[in-house]
Length: 450
Image 1 (cartoon, one colour):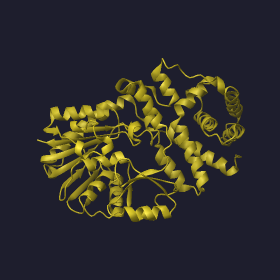
Image 2 (tube, one colour):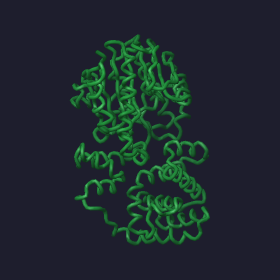
Image 3 (tube, one colour):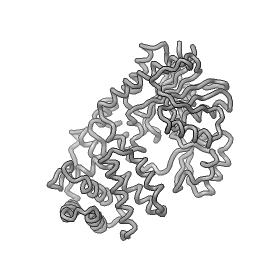
Image 4 (cartoon, one colour):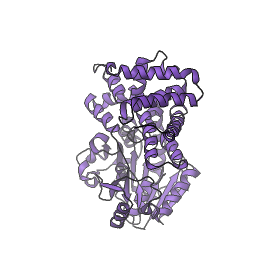
């Protein structure tokens, strides 16, 4: 596949995005969304851009290891532009077979020139040509150094691998790492009640590919489209983009008509909107979040879905509000966490999250949970969830709540989807593992106020 001048511009934008993500610590999904909104590329160029950026970020640990074997300059000592040109080039060489190696090297040199780093184009070309000549001689750490070996092979920071080996063992950890690297085209959607048949027909007319979900009959995997927002069923509010694991809190809550629900960390609104839908137009869902921007997003999604029983409100979940005291039948506490369960979709999380963050986040959760319980009526239910697989932020905080707060776990076994039955639901919580379900790693516990 020859590389056109147009594709050089795609690569140039991809390089700028990599610098924003890997050097300036911006969020990968937001950077990519912004670029794709700005550029009038065709579907092929958009696909190339997505692959170059997300693939390079996802495989950065492996790519840096390979670079370290062939460059006299340490990867961390390279100029940021050069480091990311080399990463992106290696990603194409090792993971994009349709692009000729010679074209990759030529475009890397062109990018170096375009960034006015003329003296370094020989270095870039030399490193890449050296790797191409000796690619069969690349050696990875032996399995006896399990955390190092798995981290490099599956591009995961070593501290995360060590934690998972300690908790789940070497074999399960490798399964988790493999799952996170699987190609996950498209998104999961939750179709609103009564709209499934029409929504599916309309999506198929627009060329979308649909696969049934694994937990719920209203969940589908949607792919094969270039813009969600342009789809008529999206504009009509027929569906909400939401991972199936994230649908569990509403389903496990036992919500009934007329209930008053508070969702403390609601944006973008998947769980709050799901609860409102299960209320069938009755009751009230206070969808709260910290900033004006998040509150505006909640309002936008409420209006798109046509849910009159959702009330977005700006609120700091850590600060107690007297007017909500003992008013709620259900409180949803989907709390800030390390996000280690969603690495398969948000590949930059593994670089942004640090080991010391986990204890800090667990402490923040405790602060919010103390307040959350005060909003419950006697007999009201707290639905505590997170998108991580770190025990300190999940099971450990459930045990802490039972010790410190007037609240106790209740069984969720009967409400679990069949595929999740027998996985600790009797104990009042469920840890969804990504390699077992193909969904996000996710934790849900349901507790009742004494």
